[in-house]
Amino acid sequence: MNIPAQLIIGSFIYNKLLEKEQENFRFYKRYNNLNISEWFGDNYFYDEDDLLDFWGAKNLKEINGCVYIREFDNLTRDEEKFWRSLSLNGCQIKVYWC
Image (tube, rainbow, N blue to C red; front, side, top):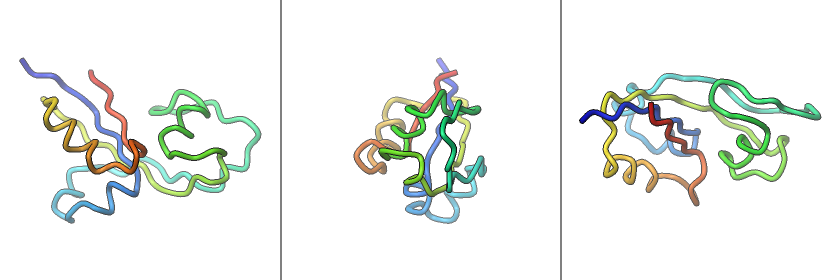
């Protein structure tokens, strides 16, 4: 059984990868200087709290980095564990199961 998924990672994880592995990801967006009073989400983050949780930040002004996306036709639980092991305290990683 194939389980398609989208893996979303931040700069911290992306920069740890070998260049060959980085080629499997596509750049999504750079997040920095978010000096807005309210942020209402985008394609990968539901709202301000979701974005803050992803970055491990307390306010939007602390966020400074890029987000990268990789699509899998079949992401296993073991592969998910591997990717999560590259995160810093569980930050800068999300998996959307399709």
